[in-house]
Image 1 (cartoon, rainbow, N blue to C red):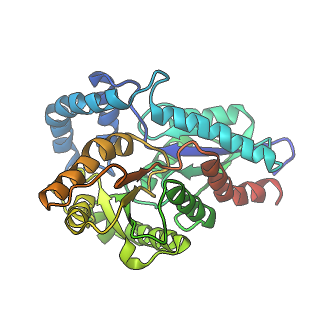
Image 2 (image 1 turned 30 degrees about the vertical axis):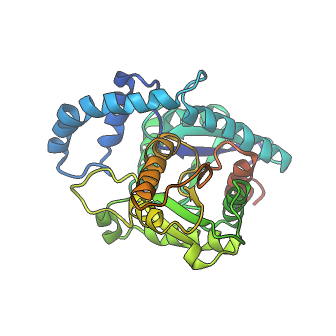
Length: 341
């Protein structure tokens, strides 16, 4: 790469409404639900269902949930990404690559992937390393980011080059960071503590079409358990956030695992979401307001009421320095190749 050019790193995630108001939530959900990789049926029929049936209801209900996690600074999802950009920029500077420009973008909200490419071009970048913040790749997530990058390259007339990192599910630093966060939350490898590794579910038709997501979630989980040094009986995988009941989804469902564990009650439950890079509605709200109460209820029904500290949510790596170091480790080989090689 010529000396006067620069390399950019673009972190991309799903997105967030601009506010918890129903109108803003409907706008965000509309973009998400009409993605061709998300739509479960004929696009015309699906458009009608989305606008006539789903958005009027989900806009209000989801808005009420967003209200509960919103902060004075705004969306916690947006804030976390902004801080993560600063953290990764600092990591590049510490590593001797202070000229690297780090930005973030969202597939279904601002800043858009297209605006990010324009920004990076304006900063003099002629190469961009694109990293979707989905450790385990899936057609519906990583694939959508790739679609967005291709559209952005075309619409902006991008003259440079880019690398696209498909996944980092087995990156050693990612595995170590997750294991460390689980221990930091109080998990004791020498006790009877149980570990539930909960991932976002995907339609089975995607797996039948060649999606390797299930293999990657399994590989990540096995390596995390190995890093913790725990027996196979002490951990399991669950899948949450099933979108609809009209299709078959990857299972076992997280609720099924929690119900089984509530009945058995062998030890404290540590709940971690390795597939979520940054805490969002599905973790901040769903786990505390829905999944934990579900586990408590099932335990009471089984005559095994739980006490304080018996269900522990392990936050995502989120905006932490450890997360910035993970993303640095994932992207630096591509940066070095373009700048040094």
